[in-house]
Length: 383
Ligand code: SF4
Image (cartoon, rainbow, N blue to C red; front, side, top):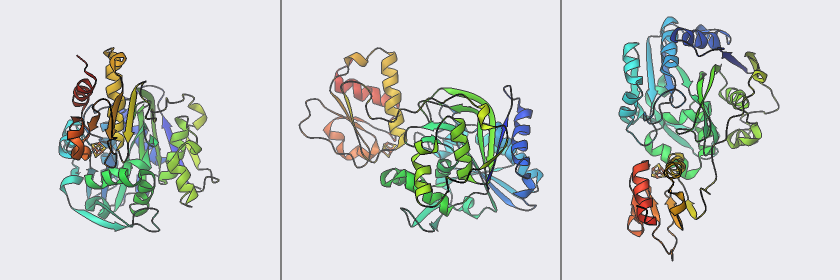
């Protein structure tokens, strides 16, 4: 039976207490020595997203990463690396700086591996569901110990982003985009088959609900969850958020393909799941944003969907939504611009560059809110 540890502080934890929470979560699984042996190279994979708006609830808490570096060193690791390939808006090198993860790694004697500027290796997927070969960070793949360090968040395409989804950061940027084109659910399951991790330590000190994974409100849970079984961890963490497994397509798909057995209950040690009663607000997943708005989306990444939700939130605050009529937004590499539109559509993002002459173009990958507001204003004749 897979074991999942849940450790909670009653109050907002201090820096020293964060180290204690992380240590306790691993002690409950048998201690760091069970995972890291003297002389091992250890690769940590936090969630840095884009570095923009970095901080609790968005990026992995730096104190959690620092604790994991310290614990790895205490266990005798010969080398500790922090490996990340950021999301969209920003170059990985910039995201690592903005998030403070680069400085933190340097202060704590760990190395930074920027997935977009370091060697990539091809790895065969055993019994693939979708992809025969994934390309991943060589440093991550070659490490003796791989430790995944996600943040607990809602997600507009997968409902939640926890351990299984966080591993996408070890893919180079072009492969991340490809996953969204060909199918992110099966893609992340294949990735996890090809690149198993030894331990997942989930940061739920501050989590995110609603417009995740970047723009939602924060939820203070003061919690760390750990497990050597990434799927067991995701099952327990999502329950703590108020989701059922049946709501999460990737867990349903994993069960349908024999990757997990939903009939087998993970063993929870530490804080019981029943002590968490708050139900996280779901991420908006529909493509209906407002009356008069049509989003034509095919092959789009969650980053662009998140930006659309976010820009409409901005326009609502600016009391401009009432002026938006017959707006069409075209997003995603496979999306086609419909013929015979009365108004110019908004053409969104670099993967729609080929269609930029067919409407009001918002450049970027994804375009930022300013670019989107400008394109929407042009399309709808807003002041
Ligand atoms: S512009 Fe295209 S490739 Fe870039 S984030 Fe948006 S959908 Fe993905």
